[in-house]
Length: 163
Image (tube, rainbow, N blue to C red; front, side, top):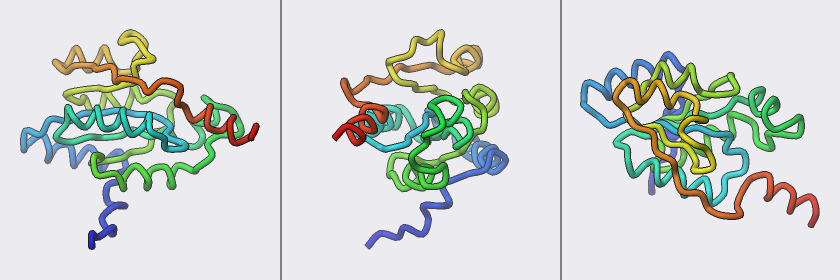
C-alpha cells in the first residue's frame, strides 16, 4: 500500500518553494511551471498536466487563490476551496510542488521561480501568457499545451445546473 502522508508536503509556501528550487537547481533538475484554477478537475486538466510533466523533472503548479478565482470567474467560484484544490493537485503523481498565489496572474511567482519551461493551455498565445517574456529572456522556453476539445469547468458546472 502506498503512503499518502507525504501528499501535503508537496504544497509549498512561496518562501519554502524558493528554498526547494535552490536544491533542485543544485541537482540540475529541469523545472517546469504551469498554473490554473483547477476548480473541478477534469480530463482536460489531466491532459495538460501530463503534457507539462513530459517536459519536466520537476513540475510546479501555481494555483489561483480563492480570492483570485472570485475576481476572475465570479462570486459563485471556486466550487472547491484553495486547500482542497491544492491537496487534489498534490496527490497527483506527476506534480512535484503546488503553491497558491493571490494575484490574478502568476507573473510575480514566475519571476521568482524562472522555470526552464513554462506551459500554458493552447487557448492562449505566447504574447498573452503571464511570465512568458521573462522566461524566454532567462533562456527558458514557453510551450502551449494541447487542449481537450469541448471540456471546461464552466461547461461542467452549466451541465450540472441545467441537468
